[in-house]
Image (tube, rainbow, N blue to C red; front, side, top):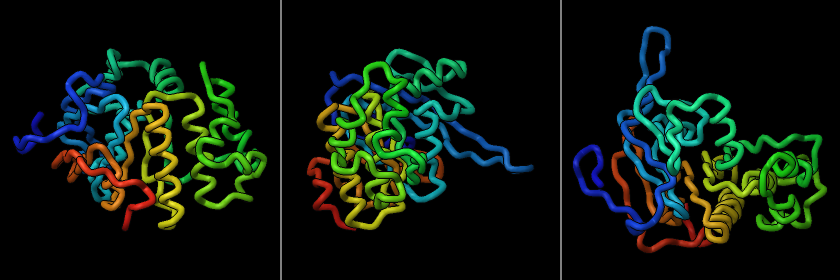
Length: 250
């Protein structure tokens, strides 16, 4: 596998590891008045089953656009995305909705919890419509919140609210977890707790996990680090000496 500059890049998995996402030639162009902005420029990328990937780059490098296309929240201007054997590029809205509901868990920088519902009830919003869900209690226990089941968001710290959001995302047992700056609104200590929860889900359930960040310190916990710049993948690094979240420094 080579990057756009023709340099060899490594990946952390064996050739027999199933490909979850295959993205080929992804381009995304936005019109802003008379100006066209190219958010992605012919991006090729494979994500593999069970790996933990960090997409690293400054604001405006195309990380969120790429993640949104992989997750079926946006469509490319050109190129294609294949999820397992399904080509999502030309899928209709109904098919994309089903894909997002059944296969993908999303976690964003802001928690998007419903203030009038408890932690348990926020997670139940997902479990009530999922095919083979965890119970809300099980999902919240996994992220260390078994003693906060009946607390409302206003009664929880920022890190606890983000862990409720993680519990909500994993409760439907998604194949893929897509995280956009999940620690961006958190302090150093709380951010580590959230990253530890993501690592636990990745290891216990084999959930392919992709985390967007501009924080280079987080990259040390990943299997692979995908560097992005100006809408392109500038490098892909294999991380041979992974660091546990509690030992990260930034």
